[in-house]
Length: 173
Length: 417
Image (cartoon, rainbow over all chains, first blue to last red; front, side, top):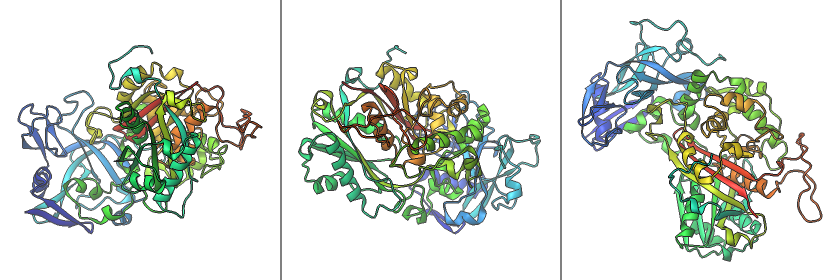
């Protein structure tokens, strides 16, 4: 069994033997962002791993996350390497720090995921939107379905919450 | 810094091994030959430079990104019968680690002398982050979170750490651009360098944006080249042609917590050097203040800055001041990448910065200074464009190798007797 689909013209194939990612993206297909939670130390981790990075225990359960977070850092890609992304430049490669488990288990640790900034209808963000987002921007997850039971997580500006007046941006626009 | 920690390599090897030979092919874009030919030529040049013959070298190591030719082929072409060889996967951060491995296998009695090479057509054949075979295969689970989000090149992988450093510490684009400016000055005194043109801060900041915060000129130059070094025990080094560069300490591919997802753990503007320094300095028995020349890996302007900071050459967060102050310029207190490094001389995944420091320690850098009757360059120490790049009285150098923000290697070398 496998999850199969196509995203931006790229074929996607996630085999069941890649159990952790198979389950993670299966939940995305159900419009849910989930993290693995260790059965021993109870700390969460995302993206998926095959053991707990904090205590090495192999067993975990899947816990649903709020999908809300803050832009921790970003790169603004003007020169796309992959041909399928050339039509979308500049695009934002966000490092999102999720609201859960901030500064745990140590100060400055966190649940951080990389993803693209998108519009509310799950298209990669146009340049005017790209120019509004920086470190500190509050974002929320959304999902783009790319196959049967398969979706990719994207990030959009959270319009439901208060945003910082001036998110930090690279000083030269 | 005399405190002796219980680090990962035995201190009794301090001063026991040396780099005795270095070799390079031309740094070019379009070598017009195979990596097999590049490897063969570089290995032969390094062995010859050492004053040895191919019969004297019985160990071989290489590193690559599956873009090179393995040791048995290179050795075979040169008629070398090896007692040890190994070809490892990896780019930046490999060379210092391989020096440590060479010391280990010699110490274990597996062979006597090891040549290490990197042969790559890094411009004309396999470019880093390129979209060759791997770029066209179906996305798996993990690659849906990398290639699937438009993340495939080194600059895209590292940009979060670079951007966050600016945010955390107020580092400015102008400060960072000085790394390229200074390395271009050094390259102007290096006849071998691919880019010898002086570059200004304005040139860097007005070059096109690749991955914010990286302009084109914040990124290194991809080139085709073969490069090699010869490692042996110090007692054997005495029979070699040049003053040996004696290895005081090595750290190999030291990683941050969660090395694979280094962006999860701790402040991401801190890199692997933060951990590697606790092996490097105690094992060497010296500290950053004792080092006269650095070779801080410059895949990007930022990598030089982040490493110098985390190895303790300045306070954390003050890397922007350090790289723009003139300290690391020829004639400054502690020049960095005096060959022009990856930003200007050529891209080798770190080995050309080791070769340069070996030559600095010999007091025989291959600049444009006139060659005297003894065959050695008569260095003028005039660092004006096109002039000298030998640093005066160099006794100690450090190489700081970068794999990713999460992976680093390092080495301290001293001028031998």
